[in-house]
Image (cartoon, rainbow, N blue to C red; front, side, top):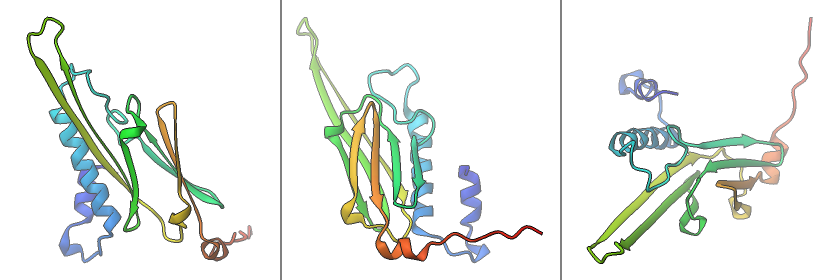
Length: 159
């Protein structure tokens, strides 16, 4: 969904309640807009998460919800993954300093980002697991037994 579409849907005079995950998604889109605006296209010293998009996808199966996030070039040791208020939060912060070989000075750089994904109800967040392989972070969160029981297939009749 584009940024303008999200803003139009959240206009107060429509009297439509706004969910927390919608606001967080809007915030992430605005953050990405500023990231793209402020990042120099010639700057290759820091990896960009997902290029022009968020690089995050979510799949639901009968057993679990699987969230995959592209984090190419990032050290997973500096990645912070938390679940709070029905959302998965991914954040990264790293600071580097290096000195020039001829002793002429030093340079410091700081990189940080934060992304949030709204999660559906009925997940057993205490059993969430995360793994990182080949620049892709995979978070698996199983459904609670109650949530599994609430879901059932519906037979479609064809006339």
